[in-house]
Image (tube, rainbow, N blue to C red; front, side, top):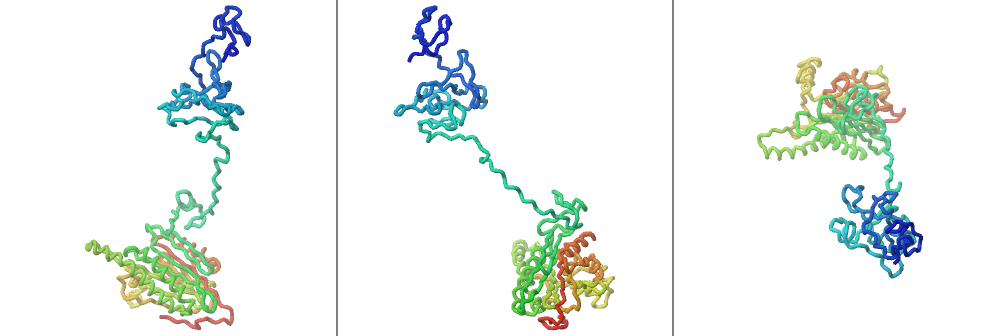
Length: 487
């Protein structure tokens, strides 16, 4: 095919030519015998908007139909590819919109070798692969040419929909310090107001129901919380509600005291929820619940016997804990315990005297009961808190203590471990520590009592449950009769 129309000047004398000239009018150069242009293909980097200029002007890669596309073809010689990756596009696959190859005419595949073509061992894409991106290398976004592109990779310009935004994070309610109840908690887990380190999961637990609330805290000296509690409400046969609180204190000198307290509190609570709706008297139900809790703690010792058989010289104490519980049902207040955890009664009318409703299973209590020492002297002794009753496989015969009362006025019941009553031992001290609105805000009152123990030094784990005791309407009698009983 004649290429005279492509020359703008004579190759011999550089005389300007006109379209259609076959011979130079100055030097007579035969323009029909113009040699083929050199085979090099000046390149530009993919994504460039303007082609590089060659000494002879821009060179365009031929389209499949032989027409010029006006776009240069890329080549790896361009310094824009520092990694040496082959980005050359074969001229046969560069086409303008609307210029598809004629039917039955396959496009020229171009040279079979060289950088960027099938058969090049440096080409990591393998034979027949094509490199391209919409809007670059001579292809348009809406190209619909007749060439079969089923095996060609598709390159799309990312849109906003390709990068969905993350859902907004819900704001969590701001927690306040468990000690001062005022300061915010920083990212390190400390109160910005008083500096108290905030507890981890079991280290601090709070729960509130309609008629009872409880709080448990690790304290400031122990490395873990060995206390446990369970609170619940049971429906009685007459349709009224019984409120239950069970508090357990793991014996630190025993093995796995935290497991013992958890097992005892859960077992006792479960049995009460089962027996009270059946009409069992609360005092009897509580007696049976303590025995069931003791059995649950005994089961934990089975694993230790295996450990001792493996190492007979290793001494281990059986898991052990104390237990104290209270039930408010039908105008009756029932308490049960084994160990040195306590129950206090605090009337709403603070002019009326408060009272402690339990007696400790401890060395000091035995000394006082036997008349051998005064209370102040006994509890000042180093042996004062040595317990004489507990739940565990190595305990003496389990003899739960239970008692029932019928208060003549409204008030609150405080069920707690010695981690609290060490800082409010006398009933009057407990009455001063608990807020005056405890009957209407039991959770807040439990939080305040735990804070009172932490402010006092927090030498032990602290657990407290607060049960409001409402008065029955005039004329309403207890479902379990009147009077008080004690066992």
